[in-house]
Length: 77
Image 1: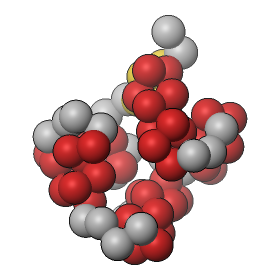
Image 2 (image 1 turned 90 degrees about the vertical axis):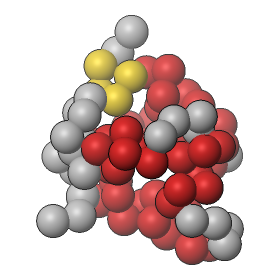
Image 3 (image 1 turned 135 degrees about the vertical axis):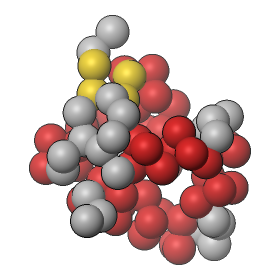
């Protein structure tokens, strides 16, 4: 089952005409790690949230709201 967070990232990629793999590359991570995060199988660091928010031009708090609504967890560091 796709998380709400996964759907948010998918929509971003569609709207910006990029693939998930390209987005993972922009985040300087492997597609496998990116997929694990999106599917809720890996915890997300505060640093990752900051980088993702920067790329998406949204606030970190906006992303955290989507994380809270999903099965995705993050660790504040």
